[in-house]
Length: 171
Image (cartoon, rainbow, N blue to C red; front, side, top):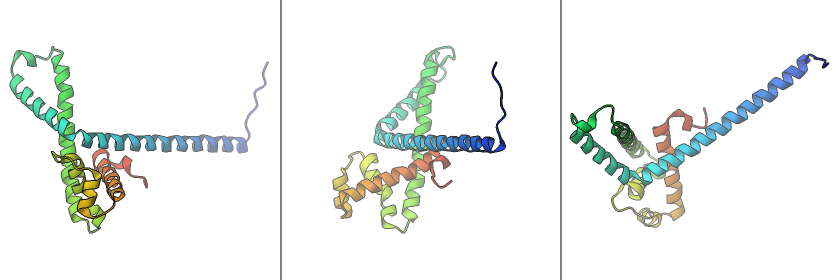
């Protein structure tokens, strides 16, 4: 038969410290993973901006055409497809609002690298004819690596606007 012994206060204190430390490490890992995913998702949204906007326009047309028709019946599986498409439309409206806000933030900035970040994103991702990092660098008379850094910083900034407080390190 096994004997059960109680832990001393010192042992309990050390055990509590170890558990607390491990929980903290796990929270930090989760937050880092969230930030990496949000950065990746923001970059993917920007990279596919035109395709998603085209998709949204098609969905708007479909919703208008299908309103009050047989295809709009609640029991049809098409309803689920339209819900998914509607989420894309809603997401793109959120992205557009974030870009409008970010443009205003950049225009108000007195720092030259911050003030050009929106324009760099626009040229790289949003314009119909996208420009390379080198072409953008030539326009601003800076090194290409400066543009790469500005793009990364801009995506970080927009990620905060899109995903909120979890993107901020200091909290």
